[in-house]
Amino acid sequence: MLFVSLLTDYTTGDPTPAESVAFLVDNQAALYIWNLVIFIVFGIALVPLVLVLRERLKAGSPGLAQAAGAFGLIWAGLVLAAGMVSNIAIGTVADLHDTDPAAAEPVWSALDSVENGLGGGNEIAGGVWVLLVSWAALKTAVLPRALNYLGLTAGVAGLITVIPALEAVGAVFGIGLIVWFAWLGVLLLKEEALGDGHTHRSEESLSRRRT
Image 1 (cartoon, one colour):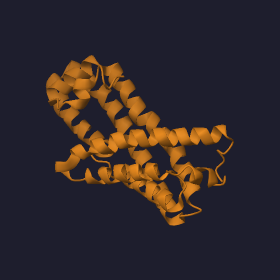
Image 2: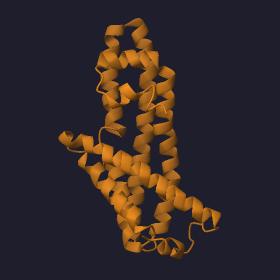
Image 3: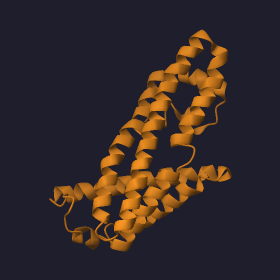
Image 4: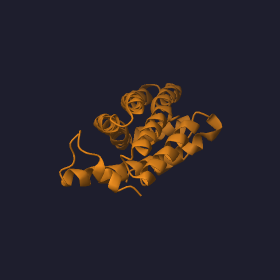
C-alpha cells in the first residue's frame, strides 16, 4: 500500500538529491517501515526458504542445489545489509538536515549509492539464485514446469541488470519474483496442509502437479 500511495513519486520517479532529502525528512517513519518490510523482513524470511529449497533439490541435483543455496544465502545477506544501511541513512540524513542542510544532499547521494549497490541497483545474486533453483527444479521435476520457466525468465532478467543501459529490465525480475514467491508459497502451504511439509518427504506430490 505504501508503494502505490505515499511513496509512489519517490519509488517510481527519478527525484533529485534535494527532492529525496526533502521527502525523507517529511516521511521518515513511512520510509523506515517500508525498508523494514522490503529489506529486513524479506532478508530474514529468505534464509529458511533458501535452506528448504536446497534440501528438496539436493537429492536429484546436488551440485546445482548447493550452488543455489550459496547464492541464496549471499543474496539474503546483501538484502539485510541494504536495509540496515538504508535505515541508518534515513536517520543520519534527517539529523544532518536539521544542522547542516547543504551537507545532507551529498551524504544522501553517497549512502543511497551504497544501498543501491547492495540491494537494488543490480540483481546479480538474486538472479543467479532463482535461475539455479529453477534449473535444478526443472531437471528433477520437483516444482511445476510453468513455475520453473517463470523463475528462469526472472533469473535471466536479474542478470541483465548488470548492464547499466538495461537496468529497467529489473522490473521484470521484481514482478516475476513476486509472482514466483506467491506461487511457491501457495504450493508449500498446500503441502503442509496435506501433511507433506517435511524436509525429506517424497517428491511425488509435486511431480504430479507439473503443468
